Image 1 (cartoon, rainbow, N blue to C red):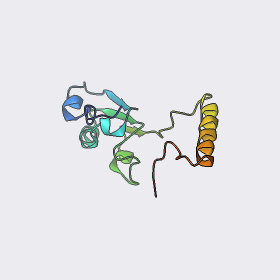
Image 2: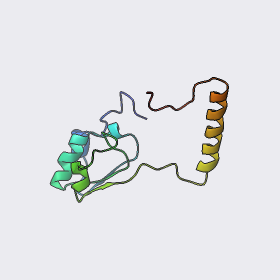
Image 3: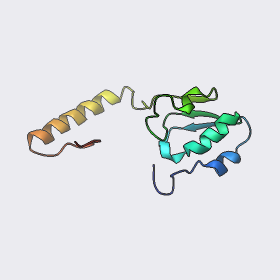
Length: 112
């Protein structure tokens, strides 16, 4: 989880302690890894990175991480499994029920 204790847990010091050629995989939260530290190591080619999440999220078009040959950026779509459709159906039903009874929907990301 992203907490005060995990923000930039993977920083320059952490990365420097890894052996040459190591692969760093971040499937946690983007801010767990310090993007500037990742860029410093990736530019030099010492480490490789597979990033399912980034900071910022999403990365802006043209961000340097997209151009580095030792960085793989994958879409953050970990929920796509056979178990997802029933969960989505339950969530949609819950949202409809909440709205019909004057309640507030859950999991709202942006409010206008």
